[in-house]
Figure (tube, rainbow, N blue to C red):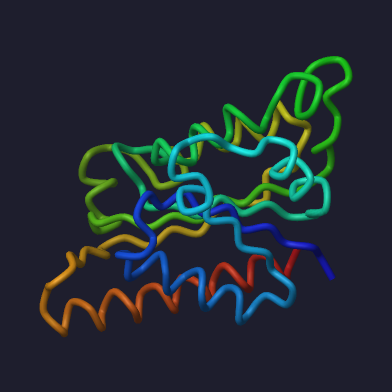
Length: 182
């Protein structure tokens, strides 16, 4: 059994529907998964680097869970990566602490997946940065799970809310299958 760390980069998880559902369901489906909601843990941006590195050391699989913002990760997750993936820890001559661990990207999008194709790119291209991070840190790229067409604002209608929850639950099930296969 793998030790799974799910690092959530949603900037406002309390008001999320889909990402909150993904996390709740993933924790239920993936035995022993540890959730790490970085924006909630560090609202002032002062990341406890030692604590976060300790979580990474215990993990076999690291999942980056986030809503796609401007074709990339939200700033809270980017800040976390910049703070925690330090020279000498994740990279550099002595930075081998993440070597061999598996990295998975898991993201939701407001736009439908077909919109990516209409704009001339693939979902796989949206995780090029995460693939490079894995390679640079000596991690194994283990793939991604993506779900598009999730858009629900607080106070929105019940049908949209239920659709976001259903898509989030389906996303979590696919994520659990991917993680269990590693």
